[in-house]
Length: 437
Ligand code: XLS
Ligand code: CA
Ligand code: CA
Image (cartoon, rainbow, N blue to C red; front, side, top):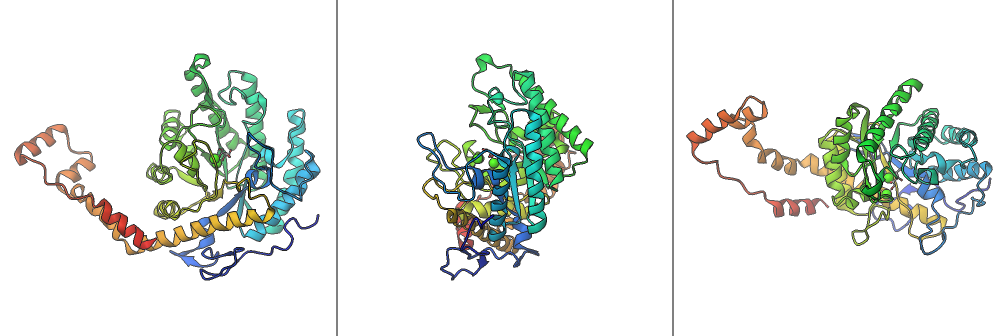
C-alpha cells in the first residue's frame, strides 16, 4: 500500500519558539516532568472511529473528508488497508495508543458468525501493525448503538434477542481486545436510556443493565482478560435520557449492583458539559470516588447542545485535568484518548495532524503547569489549611467517627457559638492560577 500521508514525516518536538505547525511546541515525549517522561504521564491515544471512519457528514450534507487510502467499500480488504493507514498516522504522530469499536475496524456481516470472521481477519492485521510499530491498544469497545437491532437499546432493550446479540457481540469484542493486549475495555451505553416513559419499564431496564455487566465481568474472568473495565458516562444523545448520566450516577449504580470493584470510569470532557457539569468537576469527582480510570480528551461547545467532539485546546481544562491525574498518582491502565473529530471544513488528511498536535500540546502544557502548581504547593496548602479545624479537637472526633449528636450538643452548648469562618479567597486563588497559566 502506498503511503497514506506522503510528505509528512515523524512529528518532532521543536520547542515553544518554533513556527512549524507540524511540530510539537510543548509535547516532548522524553522530557521528564514530576519524575516521569511526558509520554508516560500523558499516554496519548487516537480514536479510530473519528480519525479513520468519520467522514464528517452532518444532517444537512454528506461527508467532506478526503481519505485517499480508503476505497469507500465495505470490504475486509479495505478495512485492512485502513488499519495500515491508521498505524502510519499513529506512528508519525507519536501517539503510543489507539482505541476502537469492533464495527469501526471491520465490516458487519449478514450474520454474527460472518461479522466475527471479518473482525478476526482485521484483528490479524492490527496485531501485526502493533508488533511492527510498538503502538498499543488503550481500550477496545463494541458498537451497540449503530445497527437498527439496537433501536430500543442493547442491554436495556425490551427485545431479549437484542440483549442476547449484544452479549455475544461484547464477548467477541472482549476476545479481540484481549488478543490485542488491550489495557482496558469501555462500556458506553449509547442507546441504554429512553425516549419516553410511556413505553418504558425503568426498573426492569436498570436491572437488566446490571445483569449484562455482571455477565461481562464473568466472561472477562472466563477468558482471562486482565484489562480494566470502564463505564463512560453520558447524559443524553442519542437517547433523551441515558442511564449512565454522569460520574455520580454511575458510581451509585455500580455500588447498588455489586459492580464497584470491577469498574472505573472513562470521563469524556464533552459528556461532562452536556451533563451540565464542568470537565473538571467530573474528573475531580471520579478521582475523589477512586474510580477515575481514563479520559476521552475533547471539548464541546457551550453554545451548542450536542456532542461536538472538538479537539481540546483550553489550557484551564487541561491543567485542571492534569492536576487531578497527578493527584491520583498518574494513570495506570488509562490514558488521554482523543475522542474528537476535525471540523467538517478541515477535510484534508494533514488536518488530522494539526488537530492532534494541538490537543497533545494543550495537554503537555496542562501537565507542565499542573506539575509546577503541585511543586510550589501553595494552592494545595490553602485547601489543607481551610479544613484544619478537622485535624484536632471536635473536628478530629467527627472525622474519626467517634462523635455523636450528644457530643456535638454538649460541645456547642458549652462553647455557645461556632468559631468565626475564614475567607474562601476565591479571587486570590483565581489570580494565583492565572500566574501559572
Ligand atoms: C459517544 C462516545 C463513544 C464512546 C465509545 O459519544 O463518546 O464514542 O467513547 O463508545
Ligand atoms: Ca467518548
Ligand atoms: Ca462524545
